[in-house]
Image (cartoon, rainbow over all chains, first blue to last red; front, side, top):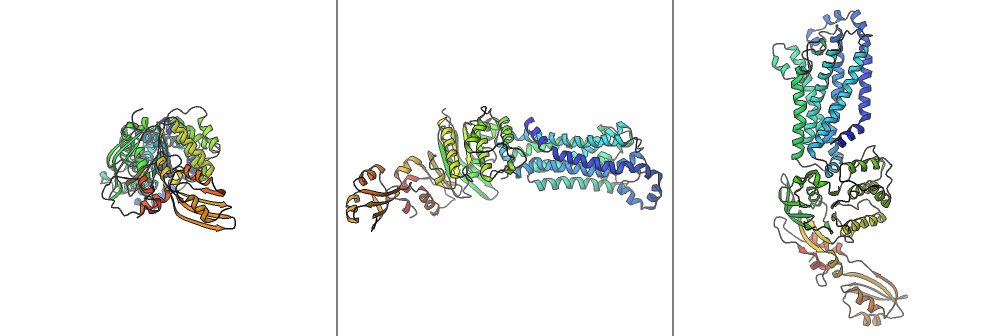
Length: 262
Length: 329
């Protein structure tokens, strides 16, 4: 199993590096802007916008350091980049390798199907964690210079939330690939889960009376309690991590049951 | 070893409404080579993939090296060398890296065995896999199938994309594996590719085995086309000489360089050679028995795929009376 894991990591170091670079680039673009934003007329601008738009964009608290980092990175570009990477890798893991013919050759050797999926799930988690660690390091690096006033603990918890959310979308793609097959289908399922989670959260933000909408959005599970503000622990993200563990296990069973597609 | 390498009985495979295999029986003993011949879509690849547990059978029983493929798991597949029919390899990894990965997840590979095989096939292992031509990828596929000296080789259309010289090397590898006690199952859509190496042949069509045969017996019994030019004689003299031989479709022509003979010969080679030694032979061409033709005729025979019949003995199709040419009737 470790052989499959290492091959997967070694084979995708380029894409891992490129996604990391994109995260560094986005953060270097956004974070230094914060001091000029608080100093300016941002609050006046926000007050002039329709309140629905502000809550939908998640800009309610954009004038505080944690609110700004949440709105620009964790809740938006970071979510988008890490989730896209996660879904991309996860759709390659079974669906993509099956289409390229590699899975057939792998499984014809001494590799078990369950162990293969497990190795792929671990490789996915490792790469997503690398991206989140890179993001976390850059956020903390800008903390002082950009006057963000973030505390390390909450940043780590928000990083875990970001990783959990990206993996949540990824493991759906992994499960789709293992249960049905096809790279495009896997990626589509992962993207659908990501978009639906984001949309549900946006709807929930606009309709404060219906808690059930927020309660059913993985995006809310991750960021609903504003982890960057403090007072939240990784344990509060348990619904996310439950899926992140359970879906690969289902994927292991699913791939063991089905015919390989030629 | 008394266990059969492959023991398949009444194997069936359905994909929804489509039926790929309608109940096939196969037997392969260690130290022998079985050729699976059939047109595209006959079910060859499906059969081979079931043996590797890549597909699950819908019915019937399958035992590979004494174990049921699904229960045998990775430990069973370590003992099998598999070459997919539609081998696709891509990526930046070199051939050497690819082989070392498969060496780690399979039975131990004897030191230097991969390099030695690559050298025999004329394959450069330092090049990235995606930069390899189709033929070179096929060579890489052959190396990964053979390198761990498996007890069973399952090779799907192994010679596709290989030039004749490499095909010959490949056939040598198959013979060596058989000599070392391995069982080999290879598939092809043409008989000529495997008749030099297979001990037995099974012909697959529409998901059924429609004929089987022992290749050595087939070759002895099948008709050969004989073309010759006999100098210093006329056609009547030549015919007097040859008339006792079992020749068919005989054409004799007097030409400036001698008497030209073109015929099908149904007998033992020795009798032919001894007979013509009394003539002045200027040219001689004795062709391989044309088993291909017999099989092509066989595909055309009307048959009802829904009913299971015992497979025909191929020898009966190429026999002196029921010759290859007449097999279709």
